[in-house]
Image (cartoon, rainbow, N blue to C red):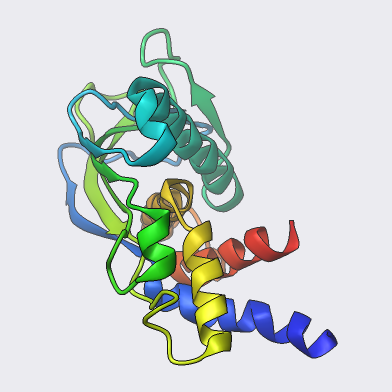
Length: 232
């Protein structure tokens, strides 16, 4: 029992690190860059109106509720991640009425695909995989209405095998269980870690954080996901 309890998170870490990933692309720094770090970073819910959605299962019965929940989930993860690894952060109900100081992190969902838990669990290897893509804008509220930092995130889950594509009974059971647990919530968590990582890197490059506080979003993100799934 002790061996299983020790090995399971380790196996999960190894698998999740390779089967689920989100990356940052297309980073652009435009206009005048901030001259000092913000005292607070505000996080607005990402827009959901212009994105492409493929919502499978029960969530598809009320697409608007699903979109709202997904945006709120990403915001919650972002507030915590930014507060822990960048600067104090709080959720902003909207972009109107914000103070004239601090930063604003906002954006929109470009694509959200919930995939199919049945296909992920049974087949895997890409079948039923999830997908989340976003565009991110970061504003200096004291300086301009134009974002000084923009980038995109893209990624999802499901490179690992499922029940019928695994090589043995132990591997099959583990893959099926792990695949079933993955979903859009996990994509939101991974997306938030990449956004947090981009801001953390910006801070370090500007000398506002010591390099010892560098945020390794992929390594830490995988560990946190395993911890959340197996120890909560």
